[in-house]
Image (cartoon, rainbow, N blue to C red):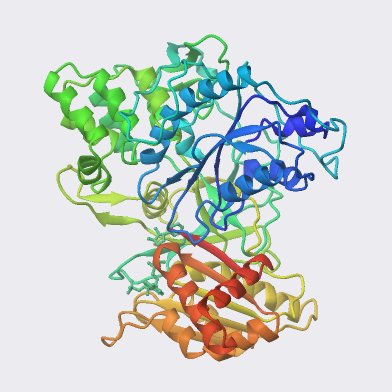
Amino acid sequence: MLNIANQLKLGTQSEWPSSPIIFVVSSTGNGDPPQNAESFWRVFKRLKGADSLSHVSYFLLGLGDSNYDTFLGFPYDLDTKLKSLGATLIGDFGKADEATGLEDTVEPWIADLYPTISEHIAKKKLDPDPPQKDTQSPLISTDDTPEIKHEISKDAVVVTENIGKNTTDAPKKKLKIVGSKGKKTLKAVVPKPTTKISEIVFVDDKEALIQQFNSALDISKENPFTSKVLSSRLLTSEDAKKQVLEVTLDISGSNLDLVPGDALGLFCPNDESTVSALIARLGVTEPKKLFILKPKVSGLDNVNPHIKTPCSVFDAFLNFVDITSSVSKRLLMTLKEYATDEKDKAQLERLATSKEDYFQLIETPRASLLDILNMFPSCKPDLAHLLDSLPPLMPRYFSITNSLKIRPEQARFSFVVVNFPLPEPYDYKYFRGVCTTYIHDTCKALGYLDNKLIQPMTLPIFLRNRGNFILSEDPTRPIIMVGPGTGVAPFIGFLEEREYLRDVEKKTLGPAILFSGHRHPEKDWLYKDELKRFEENKVLTKWVTAFSRFEDNVVYVTHKIKEMGSEIYDYMMNKNAIFYICGDAKTMAKDLRELMISIIHENANVCEKEAADILQSWVKEQRYLLDVWS
Ligand code: NAP
């Protein structure tokens, strides 16, 4: 997103096209726009005038995850704002849900898009736009307008955002009108194979392999900073259900302005042995030979920008594409095109089209590209087409656990090493997280875990866009922090910062209450010593622990919060406290939301609906803040 923003620059309704606009948007965990839509939204939400966009019509596809309370928050806000300005939604607002499978909505929505556009345009020709009123009236109250390139086809404006792996399915190219077929409702469709857009051209220039980040550019996802790993330690016992590793990075020279609550984005390579197996299966004879990608379709100049060429085929699979996620339905249909055995073809199509089979044989066992290729030996995909079809390897995000005021030029983060058994029928017994396994195994191999460093290690990092999950500028405001498991990580940084504010800057601190959740006191009591010290020196006013697998009791942070319901209510209602929640979105954050509504309901003596409205008002006031994941 957002090509259309360029059009806002002149700030008049006449600048908006009357051709339909296609919005494909996701939202962040808090329901806010994603990073690359922020500048657009900052301008767009200030637009005024009930009829100012009455000549505008739009399509809308939202992508989200219903595990989050704020499911499709930004797409809904965008829809509401567009309607409030008089714009008309064409077709159905597509509400794709990662929890149930984005493709279930995305595929039929795309299939419906082209005939609906044709129908719309045909209708418009019969009934052209009414003359526009007041075409010079300013729509925006600021000239703080971002410079963003736009792309307008003859008949429609395509407005998309970069939404990671999901964007590969989004309609990004100029639209081709395929003829009017009348109004359709969303229905299941057979996924289309991906289009081949590039050719591999092998090159000889070895010098070209040296990929150097441009130090003149600001650090960003596209231009990460190479940080040095200073140390690494296990925070859990060897027999803990989930092992948690803490890593400390040297970020000197990066000028990264990190505050507690910020998260670092990290790039890690795929597992080398998996890449080697994949390359062998694909029959690549010269995996280390350098290549560049040449566009196959004229007019496309930068195909697959995430594959930083010149690079070798090995490097492309190692560093730039996602080879471990479950294969998408579209990729299955693409692989079908390259299978020579009719039985393989039929089975690949069945996996792509049967919801039950896809769920059981692909999603649940997390069947990767290699699993599928091994299962269907007659499938020999074209290398360039495969690289076109695989999603980019995405960065992983981790909250920092320190204050740079206390530890300048260092960034610490901690994470669960993802490693769990998978159901049959595939070869791999375990699913291993790409990034967490890489960091753990490399730290172990290089001697970090035994304090016997054999060789230094580096990690490319960048700063995730700062949200509102940070400390208030007013340190006297009470804070309530809820952090089960690794969710406690950002609060260690909060407490370090508070200690500095009090002891060095001589500021007065308001009360701070922390609820931390662990499984067992001897196995995974994360940051026990640090937290004890903060409690003793009163940086932490109250620390409440919940152990879920200790002495046959299941005690969660929610149980403890319930016990202190009226005290928490008083802090939130009468003392302007800020409530921070970090950790699992799927159950913990949802259960906590329900609990908070019941606490408000009981203490304010209001009905559940009014209690939910009060909670919502805290969200709006930015004092019920979430940093959650699923
Ligand atoms: P966790 O699985 O959420 O468990 C932490 C504690 O919360 C355990 O004692 C757990 O108890 C308890 N718990 C379970 N359900 C609860 C509920 N409904 N309400 C309150 N407490 C509940 O946290 P974790 O062990 O730190 O694991 C984190 C997971 O998040 C990892 O699998 C990781 O892949 C993922 N993740 C982490 C990050 C990050 O930045 N740290 C980012 C992305 C993803 P029981 O297990 O005994 O029921």
